[in-house]
Image (cartoon, rainbow, N blue to C red; front, side):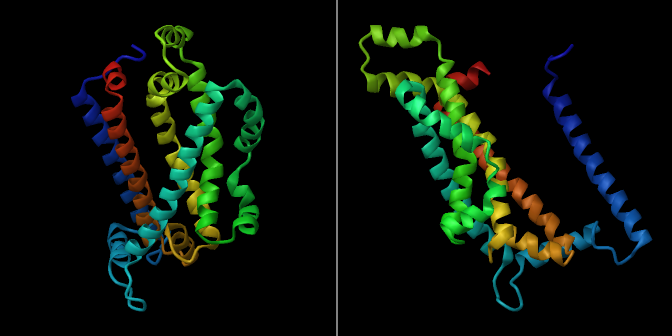
Length: 267
């Protein structure tokens, strides 16, 4: 039936089979491409990918630096600061809009406009206003995720049943207690889910900005190696970005499980 749950063992088997099929398909595609052109670098073999991983993790002969370490540190710093300010700003604005109609009337039009602005299309504007330093990378992530995240938090507050708010008022809760002890606790699970959904877009904005002007970072390395058609380096970097996103998502799920046990149990 539609929507029926399957057994965990069957789910695991299907997942493993799916991954195995994908790897087998890539192996076949790479083999066919190298039969046509033994010097092809667009679809590297597993041996070439292994060599690419060595390039990433081993010290560079010229600089002595490890690409992976240097790029990961710089990109992680930019991403963390962008997400930190974007999330904090979205929480403050979203909660204020949901709790105070006067604030909603003043801020909602600006959020509606910014939510429709593709940050990658406005890269030149970020360069002019913020330069090409850390502020530009943080700014593009903040502008990219804050409007949508704030609107999501605001809508979650609007969906809280009126009975819960009225019950808190009846029991004598102050405005601060109503906001922090009732409203925020009610929307916290959805708030964390919304943050999880913004990890992918924030990585897109960061890589786009690094691709355009950075001299270090994941986006810079992808630009440099893609121009040289060194796909044996590009593919491992893409895998690292996926792992990066999964780790952040896993951390947020742990936070949700710890802080919102009632929500997790209900799921």
